[in-house]
Image 1 (cartoon, rainbow, N blue to C red):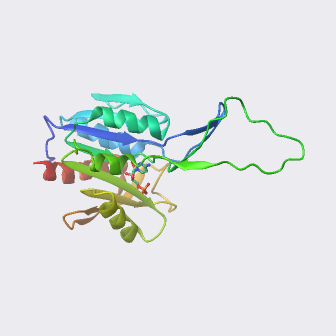
Image 2: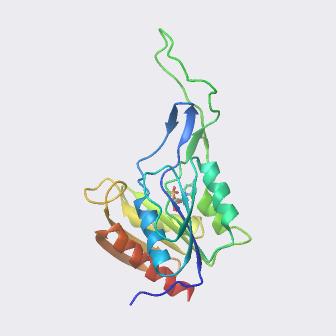
Image 3: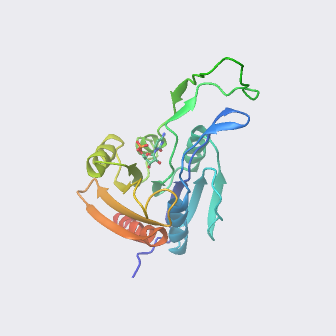
Length: 219
Ligand code: C5P
């Protein structure tokens, strides 16, 4: 029996962000968007009103989901904040932490004899932390943490630092899980002390299990 989400408004972010360097180059990451799209799909199947803010990905919009496409972290922030208020925010996007300070208006050229290039990067806004501290804070704010080591320590640190209700941590850099995979293994930590292993399983099943934890806490 899956817990219903009828009448609830859920906001999901998914995919990477691309931070432009010049008109042809950008800084990106390996997020496929599959986990966030699976959460949006599963939430819509449970009757929630679902808004999906998607970075640049090649995925079809799940049935019944309202989608806004963005490219950069700054655009994602604007789209997410514009969608508030919601009952729950699930930040599954792999938002770039850094962007070039300026976007070159023309393609940057190679110069003979110049062998190095320094790009100055500045921090992007932390969308998740901003939503969690917002005057219109959703009842539930859920983050993801992709870690290569010390998963629990880093995930719990983010849960506290960003004032989240739940954080779903995954090991990246292991076979059969993580960014480009259809399967994943999540450990979910809660502000309420929860520590729950989900998977290994296809991302669509993990999305459902995560929504059970979300629906329980919303009801
Ligand atoms: O701190 P870290 O980037 O590992 O945290 C990951 C979580 O924070 C994810 O839920 C991601 O969507 C969110 N995040 C964000 N804005 C950023 C960086 C991360 O919303 N600039």
